[in-house]
Length: 278
Ligand code: 7PJ
Image (cartoon, rainbow, N blue to C red; front, side, top):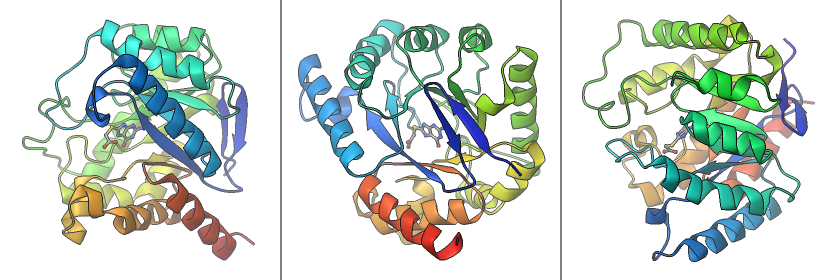
């Protein structure tokens, strides 16, 4: 199946190899101390480092979506994300913004963002309208509940079937809004309203979801509790587990992996491809 992704200024043929998306956090809790300028400087230097490490795209996030994390205001999120987006705009790599707020989507698109990554699957009122008239890629992710309550007691009958049905409904909504199919990728949303068992059932069935919808799959397992549950390791000792998870996702058909550990994952993916694609 042809897998192409239109991604703003860029276009990717995903048959050749999987892409590594590096996570760039702009939330203050990821910096040693406060101060907006210091945060900006830190984000730009981390982005430069990721580029030197071979990252394929950079995902800029201004709101923590960890379970239980409090929401941030529109002004706060724009204040974190937009300066970073402008600063990285001409570094030659596709830039993604991780947001569910239509107003952030609009501002990011005006600033030339190449992908909008929405953990809420473009369900907010105005989200489809915000992204319809652009050429950026759209990552549609599944989440059960909201970041505040999603891990309380996630329940599914058939998790793979339900996540697939949700993604199909959202993709149909995007297509009905006039969005080109080649702009869309899908994501089962590891850790977003799922138990460890749900997460591994989804990981094992990435290929099934990819084939059901005929769209590229993006997978984000990096540092998540599903890695900790299997390895018994705290988040700062999950590097090997994270790489194992990324390669497993690719083996099952994912074409973009969203990771913190860029240099290690880039090398692992290179070896994976040398061993699998002649
Ligand atoms: C994901 C995301 C993910 C997509 C986050 C974290 C939580 N976007 N944003 N997929 N996770 N598309 O990185 O631990 O899995 S934030």
